[in-house]
Length: 281
Image (cartoon, rainbow, N blue to C red; front, side):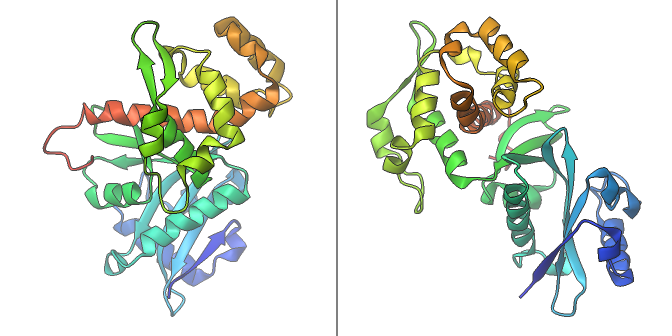
């Protein structure tokens, strides 16, 4: 049985930890730099989650960074001898626990398009492919800390359809009733949730093209950042005056599921960009 340890202080790392971490880093072809000090600069908000074997040797790690209140997984790596044995999955589970505990609604990573094993692992762990850069050389992938919220985003993507007459979004209730979400989350749980009801009201007031990164960023800060909430509410009023009827709390509650909805929509767009020779989707 493998164990993990969250490292947030250099003092928590033994000399053996440092040696193992350095060796793992040297073996990783996807590392952006091979100086271990860049990854364990804990004073700069970085975190390392280490995975250990029964002898206490570090056999893999996930490196995390805080980027403007977003959690970024800068690197995940597992020793070749321990791959396909659940170590990578364990590390990602611990990342989700860390994100939840520290108030991150979601987190993301960038994966090389050629790294098929990693990409398949992230898909298995329900990461959403949102977009690519450099002509599909690499992919941005997001995961939500709350599985219900992510499932709600998927539900919105699958059941809200564009009305071609006015470009509005409307719920297809018959499709919703037939949708299979998962063993733990049922459609009725989603339909009766406060989050869904707010999202449904908001989506009924906006057009499909209104949902973009700028609008979502204003949703995020309304009600959560006292320095910017009035500014963001005014920006929303300017862009989408019909949202002015919603309270700060309602807009904030809708932010994460609508963000997941937006990411799933982008994943749909990604499918049209991926070639037949690419096993990503």
